[in-house]
Image (cartoon, rainbow, N blue to C red):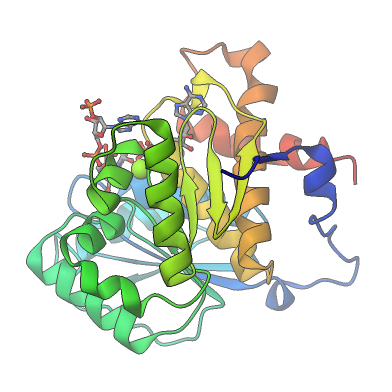
Length: 282
Ligand SMILES: NC(=O)C1=CN([C@@H]2O[C@H](COP(=O)(O)OP(=O)(O)OC[C@H]3O[C@@H](n4cnc5c(N)ncnc54)[C@H](OP(=O)(O)O)[C@@H]3O)[C@@H](O)[C@H]2O)[C@@H](O)CC1
Ligand SMILES: Nc1ncnc2c1ncn2[C@@H]1O[C@H](COP(=O)(O)OP(=O)(O)O)[C@@H](O)[C@H]1O
Ligand SMILES: [Mg+2]
């Protein structure tokens, strides 16, 4: 097994691009986040706010219509397009060309939503981040994995990974199975946990930031928004995955002396993205 490459400050500074003084929002990417369902619009509030706070110029969400007012009120900077269905996504049609799409947070797995997701995979070749229920839907429809563009980023937690690759008997077997999937379909797999590992074919990266404060509802939804933001800003997919995971962990490390472990919530993760960027020192 290859030795993991640490995702530390040195590795990140090789990949991080400071903002140009003449930047305008049109140069900083337009991200599309697709997800949410009745009772889980919060996942999209978190993901879309994190996407903006990570530097994307424009962010549009596509959600079921029940979430319209909630999202517009919670994050006025984010644009909202709605599905014809009230409670879950059933037909995903949008009227612009995003630089990156993040899909899955809070989306649910209704059969209509599965069909809509299949249509997106058949029609769009935009750089993709696949999380949560989008991973669960792929696990139920394994043939659809072939439709993912090369270097699509998947962000499973342990249970989602198990749904995707099946059970394992040891950590080594878990890694081997994940690497097989990554190599077979040219996917970048962010194995979320403590620590988070990023698999890109033969390469294994191990994150050095983050702590148990992140064990809180919605912190993965925030990570999806952050990685989608970096992809939309034209980072290479592997750089977007590594920088996203590193900054996400840093928010919790910086916040810890203020919030402690227990009171840190996903919204704190978003609030500390600015300090995480500043700590890169550029
Ligand atoms: N405010 C909102 O709108 C929010 C919306 N959300 C949305 O909800 C949807 C469902 O997402 P989800 O991850 O909660 O459900 P699911 O995939 O069944 O996993 C749960 C089970 O998996 C396990 N497990 C989890 N993590 C693990 C780990 N690190 N290591 C090991 N095991 C782990 C654990 O199993 P256990 O250990 O209990 O057996 C647990 O019971 C999804 O769309 C998401 O985006 C949430 O983000 C919350 C905020
Ligand atoms: N003990 C921990 N140490 C470090 N990071 C953690 C820990 N627990 C959770 N995390 C991180 O928090 C995030 C949780 O993601 P996920 O389970 O998808 O949450 P949600 O679906 O509620 O948004 C992942 O990035 C994971 O690595
Ligand atoms: Mg999650």
